[in-house]
Image 1: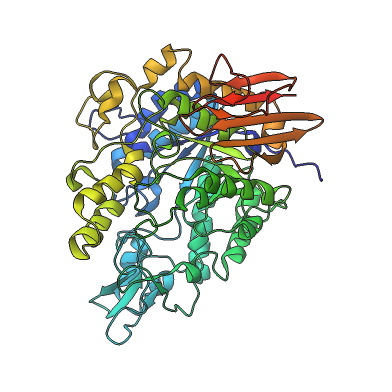
Image 2 (image 1 turned 60 degrees about the vertical axis):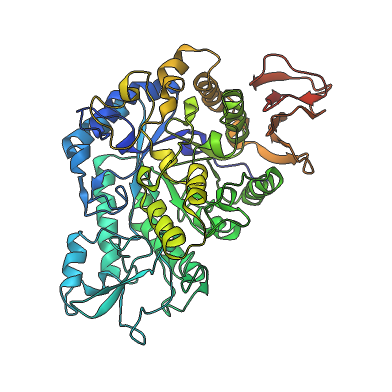
Length: 556
């Protein structure tokens, strides 16, 4: 097998910041850039290499910053461009890199491009967006928005519909128009010249639409699924290769594409080893494969280990030598890792959080840590719909509970406790002071009441904490090339309880085993195995078994 090309971003550990909930510096209850700057020494101490910032651009905040009204300015609540420049400079002085969130499938409807586009059918920017005539007096097709309801919004003034795959305040850009691509690439170059270190590209697999705009297969009610005509569309690789030629290849960047609907075969194109498109992609198979979930998302069922393992193993095996994996359990769009995949009960939270971290960080690929994950933050409880902030959850409640009556309110709220994006967006729990040390004011969103027990300060003071375990995992990745580059070999494929695998490089082998249950499970992988145990979440082992949520890694 060909020697893996060694690159800095393959060896890096990335930490995602959701700025609104990270750290407030001025008491208005909203996290900001100065707050991030104040916490950079904490991230340096943790040992991460790269910070991915969720959007900080000017935005009316219909979708928490993923609706951008000016790509070259900063959201007022987050500060100024001077604050951004100071943060970037401070990060670089500490040896930390900054990756920006690039949201170019759509803009805000308050972006000057859309205001002009919507002004008349004859506007020079009309075809910056996707406008269509009504069909039989209705929307051009049956596509359903990601946030419920039709993906088309009728505009009275010009008598046409515009496409919005997300909120109606997020009109989709028309990437077929070369002038749109020129504008996007010019903006990206502007940020690169400012000195940023890469881009995480929001829903980048959706920028090329099937120009026939056919109806989708009906999902819930009268609306249809747009995926086959949007995900990995006809020109997406052409557009990304153009982006690479004109911008990305000119700088030493980390690039990762959020690729809804991506398959392994498509990922080999997006993240190809030749580097003609992106460095890696985020797929969703391991976080979204939930049989029987309402609208493919809403459920209170836990993942089934054999299915989870099969998915992750497939991506490890099939991308080997062909493309690079990104590794994550959670992010701003997913529930908290320890609540979803582990066990957040007080008895098991620390053990299962360490187990999940071991399982992920010993795989081949670049690992991502979501803010608070490193000390075991958990999901929230939502007692009423008023407790929810997320547009996706609120719209789902309106559609499935109020209008279509597919489920009752308490059931939907139970689904939100398990799956809502709001779980990831509660303020970071820094200490046990008021508002968890996030703000001196009234927080924009509820602080999880468990902050008195679960917070960064307490974790840093406890050598046996989740935080110190993450710190050790990160240091191991930096010191042992087998962790980023070793070839992956799956083990125990029939186990209902254990996720196990080996990694091989230069005559060395890592053996990794993780018990995903709260029971002791027979496991003989380590019997008679000579070598050094480089990390485990238990001090004492039992012969022939893995203890509840036990994780072990031996280098031989």
